[in-house]
Image (tube, rainbow, N blue to C red; front, side, top):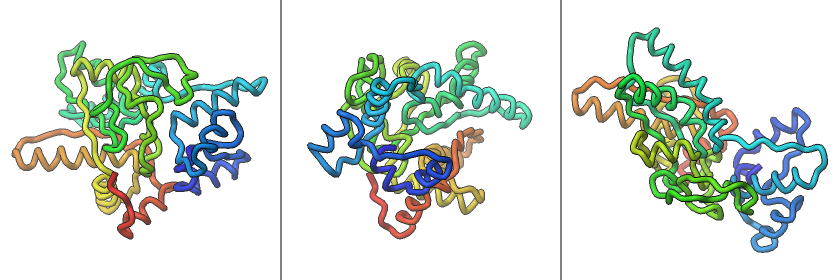
Length: 276
């Protein structure tokens, strides 16, 4: 578990321990790469790229262990598209067509899951859905990264991938949207962004949590910090449509609850949350 999330989200760790897991903060003393990083900085916050490197090193050194990489790989993005396929059916039941489809974006599978089926309709059925990927301003691979080949992990153990990247050694600030703190974007999402088929936007942390609290008060659901990025964009789209006096059907992916993230909400409500 990435060190900063290990500290920020204690209930996730407890949940896993309840089911018998042993949870270590990454970087850890359990791998050669982790020990190297800790020797340089005992307070290293970690990153998803580092955690992947440690997981790979542990897998290689432990007989009988297998490792499955998620989120960033294209096949994972395609598996997630069941979400968008279901959303298309739901929109048909509602008798509406979305003008804009929004999903948060870290490694890419969350956004791809909701957006790719609508992208297919744009390409094959001449639909005009706008597709908007929303990421943290502190980890803006799509909005500020370079489109080039890069490694999926910090220790350079994975194959090279053509993607928007901030660099495999990038360590983002310790924002609470842990699932979006990744240096690169899925090659498929990156490719479509390069072609101009999808849009991207980045938000700082405080405005994202403002949207999360507003959503919780109006809808009764406390969203995950990652999902709140999509909510922020959806609210802004609605405000813009109201100001322009144009009807706009907005579809966004509420990809998870925030019950394991209450320490983040506590910090936000107390005014202690940074605005990275």
